[in-house]
Length: 509
Image (cartoon, rainbow, N blue to C red; front, side):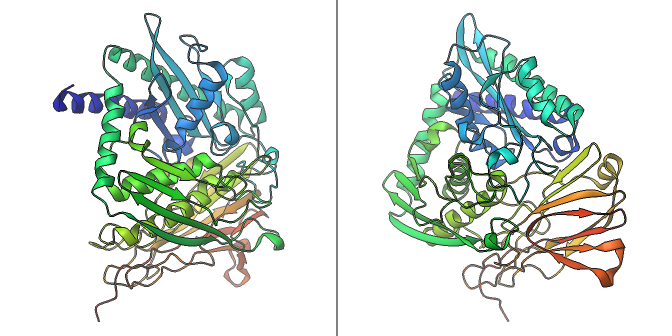
C-alpha cells in the first residue's frame, strides 16, 4: 500500500472510533459519561491487536487490548456470533477496575471475521460496600462491587450488572449506549473488509522502531511514592514505585523491579493498567504522532513483578490502582525518560485524579477533579486541567446541580499552587460542594503528602488537601485523610484543594 493510501486508511478507521465515542456520550444516561466523557472506543484486528483508537482516556485505551484478548480467550475468534457482544469488567481478566465495563463486538462480513469494535465506560456504581464502588477501606476485590468475567451480553449478564448497582436505571441506560456505540463501530468497520488492516499495525511498528533507533541507547532509573494505600493507620505509609527504562537499538524496556509489594487496600494496579501508563509515556516522549496501535508496541517490553503494587494478584482490591497508581507509573516513566530526553519532558503534573465519590438515596456521583500541569521545557504548565492518565472533562455546574442534591459553593483556580521555575507549574483547583441531603462521601486522592516534583531546577508543586466543613461553619473545618469514607449531613461542605504542577528550570530572578 502506498504511503498516501495508508494515511487515508488510518484516518478513516480513526474516524470510526471517534464516531463510536460520540454515539456513546450522546446516548449515555449518566452525567459521568455524557458530560465528563469518562469512556473510550477503539477498533481491533481479528487477532485482537489494537488497530486504531480515538483520543479518549489513556488508562482505558492502553489496557483495552487485554480485555479484547480476554474475550477472545474465553470464546475463541469464532465463538461470538454476528450481533452478539461480550461484556466484562474483571480486572484480573483484562479489565482495570470494576467500574470500567467493557463491551466487545465482532465484525463479520460474508462469514469472515474482519475485526472487533470495543468500548469501555466508567459506570458510577457497580455495587460494593460504599457508593461509587471504589471504597477506600476495601481489602479484597469482592468488596468493591460485582466482578464480571467475559460473558455474552444477554438478559442474565445485564441483570448481574444492573442488579448489583445502587442506580440500576442509570446502569441500564449507560449499557444501552455502549451497545449502540459498538453497533455503529461494527457497521462502519464492515466497509473495510477488503482493506489490508495488517498494513496499519505494521506501519506502527516501523514508526516505533525508527523513533527508538534515533534515540540514545542507555538505561535510566527513577522512583517516586504512593502516599498511602487506605485510611487505616497501618495503611498510611508510602509505597515505592520504581522504573528503569532501557533503550537498546530498536527496542525499549520498562522494568518496575523495585516497586513495593501489593498492600491490603485498594491502591493496587493490575498489570494492564501499568501497561497503559507505559504506552502513554512512551508515545508522549518518543513521538506523539506515533500511531497508537498494537504494532507500535511490539518493540516495547514491560517487566512488572507479579504481586507488586504495579501488577497486583487476586484477591487484591484494585479500585484505586486504575486511577492513582497509574498516575504514579506515568510519573516514574516520564522521570526516567526525562534523563534521556531533557528537552521533551516537563515536570510532574498533579499526579492524582482527586477521585470524589458521593452517594445518597438512589443516586451516586463520581468525578475526578483537575489540577496543575507541570512546567514544560518550552512553556509554563496549564492550570486546572486533567493530566497524564485521565483525559476527562469537568462536569458543568448546571448539569451537576440538576442531577444531584448538591450545590457548588466555590470553584476556582488555586493561585500560587504551581511550582516556581523558569516555566512555572500550573495551578490546582479549589472546590467547595455543599450537601443538600445526608449522604456518604469517599475520597481517593494522592499528593497530599508528597509533592509533584520540579525538573531541571524547578520547584515542586503544592500538595493538595481535603477538608470537611460541618454545617458550613468555617471555624469547625476539619482535615480529611487522603483516602477515606465519611458520613456527611445536609449543610456540610466538602472542600478540596488539588495539587499544582512542578516547575521546570530555575527561576530567572
